[in-house]
Length: 619
Image (cartoon, rainbow, N blue to C red):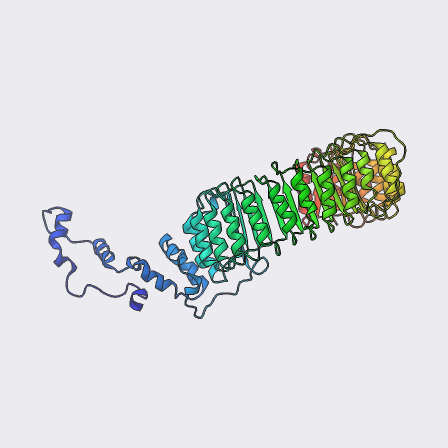
């Protein structure tokens, strides 16, 4: 065997006489019957000699396997894998544990991403051949730790067998939209990759409960499982996970029609002591599953229930009234008809440590239920309401009576700015962040009242509110005692320079982020005030405002010492004259957006890109 592997082609294998004398009749018949004796050319000798040279390709796979597993070092194995697809296939079938490790000349490689290697294959790049190459190339460095395969129908069991053999240390596997991957692939992974901790399956319709069960039985360290839009995975898979994966801490199940109460209830009741994060979306589960969550969810800290159309008020009420969710700190509920005033109040009473609450598209929640919930949830710090159209300004006032630190109200169309007397409120000294976005009925009256009772605001977002003006915003600027740090007034069409001048004058010493995008009545006067007062400003967006070259000149001469991000996108009056000012500002900028500034010539844009090489420029 060593003689065969080391063969260089220098030996003479024709020592017994003339090569032509043995087969002269055959050669003559091949060339036809000549009229006179012909001399056989040298090329024919070479052809016959090559025909008789021994080749390593004639060896069976078993012998190649034994040779390849004795190759020392990853560089030698990678080089051998480049010879042919056959050699690559044989090499990829060599398990990492079967390698005969000898002295190696490989340069030590620095591992990636928290101590292990990561690869992501997408689309046409995701093939069995590429998976085999990855397995062979990384096996000498401990194999992959993370593998993601997305959007391909060209990966099969063959590729994942190679990954299993070459990467037994695999900890994270993510498969998205890979219809050619079947249960056999997961079975191969489960046989070798016993350290697997996270499995993410999305739109894998060829995988069934059989594949998940194999992972459960052979990968006891599994701590995170995501199953999304996999129509052939059913309750049996969750039951297997419940039996065999005692370390599971996070489970996400979305849009799986064959998963119901039986699987969810078994999983939650069996892993009640360790399961911390649960997300259930668009499943055919009923009130029974919600009652199980409420009773057995002792360790759950993060719970998301989205699009559960078959769960009623009774189920959500039972979940809150069971008093089992004592560790819950974050709760998200979206598009669930069972969330009503009654069930929301029960959740507030039953979740004593709840800090973050998001309620979205729950059409049966009104001001009464919101107020009752806030009064019951004494630990609540952050409340987000989105598209809850029965919430009015009375609900907002009720929220301000609590100890909230952050309040966000988005697209709540029930808010109407009626003139009324000042409500009976005490100052909400805890509120630090207020967001009101795209609420078309929100106006000056409600804003002024909020400003009177929220003196500790630091972050203010009033976005898409065409009903507010300078006079409505001034009370909140005047009464804020700690100083605003982040202000977003984007797409508030009726705000003018006056409010920006007041903002800069009152809060210039603390303001760091200012967004005025789409405020069409904002002009150079606002930039002049910003440049005079806002020393700490590092992020400014005046896109689609009436800014000219003069405004940028003022800004470049201003007091701000660390402006890092500037956006003037869509400011059609900015021209080539602004380029020197932008270069001056560029001494500190790391991001600049000059898209749709059509009066700046392409040559000067190129000059900006060349001079501001440390700045990421969008143009």
